Amino acid sequence: MSGREELMLECLATGMHGFVGSQFNVLGDLYNELKSAFDNGDMEKARGLQLLGASFIAMWQTSVDSGINGFKNILNVIESGVPVGDARLPSVPITPEARKNLLASLSAWCKTEGFHGWPAKAKVCRSLS
Image 1 (cartoon, rainbow, N blue to C red):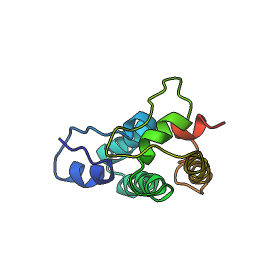
Image 2: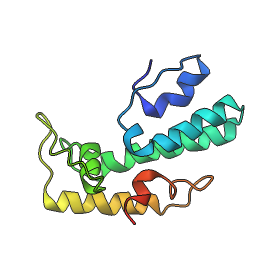
Image 3: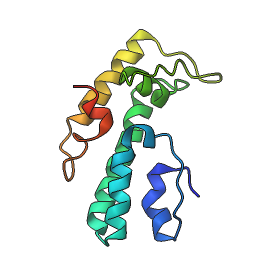
Image 4: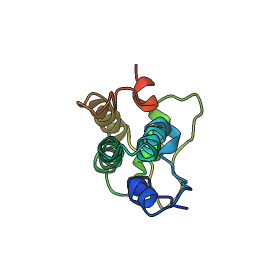
């Protein structure tokens, strides 16, 4: 079992079949499609989807200062209907300016030219509409 979404394809290639990850809350549909592509032998598609997932991680990690849990705050800004609150210590609370930067980075990521309709069809991007 793996908990690293950015290594899902590599883990599938080694025979692993169990995955636990926080991104599945907002990009589960992308990772399901990645697994289907792998199962169908479409490695080009699987690699492209894996790169998009990795770019999502990079987006939220680089759009907020160190010490702020960017992903937890994405769960708050997408207005999923379930407020998840601030991250607990040692993460620090997000400032209004950092939240604005995070949302702008997320919006920009959603508008990037993607792969097989991604990231525009991702649940997290559809929630911004």
